[in-house]
Length: 112
Length: 196
Image (tube, rainbow over the protein chains, first blue to last red):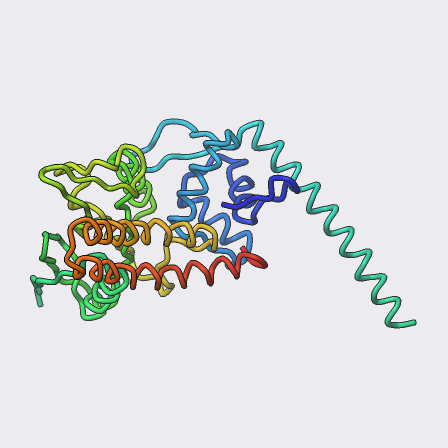
């Protein structure tokens, strides 16, 4: 998982996993959530998800939730994770506003 | 018709070849029921009912491998362990310098002979890929590459230290798959410049 430490940008996988555990979910539910929310555009491999969950847990952004039910362990977002998600949302909003401003300006230039 | 089948195969560290063979067997209606050092046992299933993915876990400690296995099984996958026997052995000590802490000394029964997972899922018509993000895929391939590089280094040191030159030339053999993996790693790194 490669995040831009200076720019604070999260990868799409990281952000979607954080969003998925605003409600406690186990691994399979996280995979389903990401696929449904992206209409199938983004699918998480089990190995990628496992590594990402471990990394996010090490960072303190997510934590195990409840008792481990058999082989399934659920995760939920932590306060630090919420801060990271909120920061990412603000970054994306700024990016979208910048893009709209520039591309709208480009359209005006093209149409005289 | 009840079909049981036993096959003798040795793929060693060639994970892709093993994965393709298991999926060909699945297409014929054979489902893996057990593994041995050189053997594979199959039972009947509907042709194409299951799909396989072969995953290298040779660098993991027993606890880490067990946790990953539990995670995969929690997703509904079935996991069988298989040997690759990729290790450096001097007398009774097996040292894996590429492994994570807790996995570097391979003892019988815990990590030795359990270097790969044969992961099975019900066929849902999609490709079975465990590592989908580019960075994660690149890091996984580096973990697969590491034993080849250590083996080449080991043989080179033996060749330099003990001769004859054949030992030194044999160091080139594990470099071939290592370089093939490096080419894949390089392609992923270039894609990562603009994609995730």
